[in-house]
Structure formats: structure tokens, C-alpha cells
Image 1 (cartoon, rainbow, N blue to C red):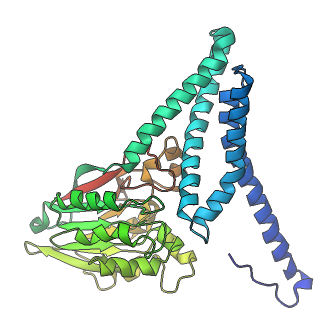
Image 2: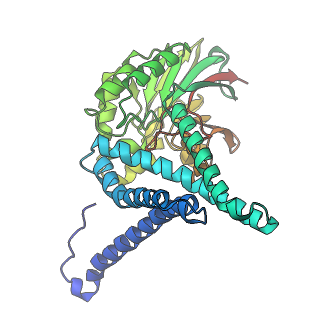
Image 3: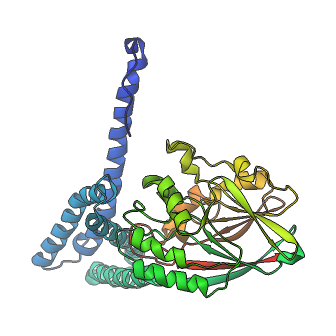
Length: 400
């Protein structure tokens, strides 16, 4: 982020803004380093230095691997997700982050188990080594399973949603929700094609893409996004931006989806009709659009609903579940969202819950508004999903 130069007259007090920003950056960098150090240190300690008494070559090899990972990780992340967008660096950094997170989690649990066994005087001299082996085996198993879950075509989750204002002619309307495809450094063009086939097999009336289409620009991810052009629906295919679009040409993604035949709901709505009844499909930009600096981009619900019949039911597409506060205040009938990935790698779902009102599933907010939060089809960063399976969602709308 560019830092504005100090204004004239800064010597009277305004000149302190620059040092404050510099201090905040240093503090932020220190916090990030301490978190990274903890993520790498605890697994190293549990596996190699907690009294397991491995032969010295094993201890040395493990220490070198963890030290090299800690030192190289920030540079790989910067190269992979910074301005260079080097996919190879991103793949290595993202995979490292996933492996270390799983090892950290189960090392922490292993440490708690160690304390319990010490208190019960169970295990003796081999206790630390047994725990180290258990942590390694469990982590390796979860990573292998989690990678398979991340790379597979998502399972279909089916759910009926009853809307009090939905007309009888629209009873049984099939809405397929696709979210968080995250086309990225790992080339998943084949996966994308299979996902499109799975969506088409659901015979949808409406298909929704709830944002975070990709990590990268439309030009970078053109081949991976191309299968979205084959997705079929009877009434509409609509799309809104997620927060990741604002890291890689949000307007370009709106244009790309229009090119593929989708209806970009860039703070606007469309109306679909069946059996003499109508449903308003509205969409807003992601909440991060407000701070993106991109002209004409913001989360604008009033603009999205401008001209819509207030007596008609509204299905709102908003990438982040926390937008439901505005939706409920406006009397929206149903909001569909993604963003959370269901936590993606347990126990990250507990951290997600701090920022979002819901991690996944159907919830009610206020007297009228319901929210469906999808776990998403793809993954961000680490190519793993642990206890947070991906999904393609089929919502069948039912009238009261």
C-alpha cells in the first residue's frame, strides 16, 4: 500500500503519521514472525526435541528441515502471492502452510496428552517418543486424506428452503450454489470441467456463483475458468465478486463471467419468473470492495434492489455471511454466501467463527431472513480439507 507524503506544516504535529505507520508495520511484522515461529517450533519440539531421544542424524535432519521451512516460507509467500504471482512458489508455500498447521494442531494435542500421561505416571521413558510417532502418523494420515478431499469433485448437498413470500408457481425452484472455486496456482482445468458436469447433472433453474472465483487474474486463470461457460440453467446464471477478486482484477472477472454467459450482479438484480410468480435475484460486491479503491465497486444493497418490486421475494447473493446483518435489516428472504470454506482445515473453523456469524449451513436471522453458507467447492492456499468437506449445494425453494 502506498504511503502518502507528509503534508506541509507537518512539523506542528502532522508529521507523526509516518512514524506511526512505520511502527505499526514493524509491530505487525513482529507479530507475524512470532506466529510463524510458534507454528514451526512446536511441531519440531514435539517430533524431535521433547525427550524422544532419536539418533543424532534424525534429530539433525528434522532440525534442518524445520529451520529451512521457517526461513524460506516468508519469501515463498511473497513471491507466490505478491506482485510476481509465481505459481511454483505459491504451490510450495501453500502446501508448507497446510502441513505445518496440521502438525501444529496435533502437536498441541499431543502435548496435552503428554501432560496427562505424566500426571498418571503412564508411559515411562518411551512416552515422548510414542507421542512423537503418534503425532507424525496422525498428521500424515490427515494430510493425505485432506489432499484427496480438496482435489476431488465436491459432493452435492441437498436442502429444502421454505420462503414465506415465494409464490406457488416457483415452488420447487432448484438453485445450485457454487462458491469459492479458487482457480489458482495448481492447474485444475480438468477439475473445473468435472465440476461443471456435476452442476449440469442437477438440472438447475438458477445457478449462483457466490464469489472467490480465482486467485489470480482472468488471463492467468483463463483455461481453468473456461468450463464455467458450459454450465446450464433454465432461468439464470448469476455471479458476484468475492474478496479474492479484489486481489486480482475484480472488474476483469466481472467481464470474464459476462463473456462466459453469466449475469454479473454488480450491485444490481434480475427477475426470474415461473408459473406466473417472480423472484428477485440480487447481488452485491464483496464487503472488501469498499476499501479496494476500485471505482464503482462497493457493497451497495440499495443499488442492487433499486427498481425491484418490494412485494416480491428476494434471493440475495453476497460473498461473506456477515453481510446478513444488512440483508436482515432490508427484509431479504434468503441470502446465499460462501467465503468460510467451513474452516477448511480443522480447527480453523473456530477462528472463522470470530469473524463470521455462521461457518456453514442454513441459519435464520431476524423475522424473515434466512442465510445459507456454503463450504465452497475449492480451497484457498493449502491444498487440504480436513473435517470441512467441499460442496456443491442444491437448494430447492418451497413456498409457504
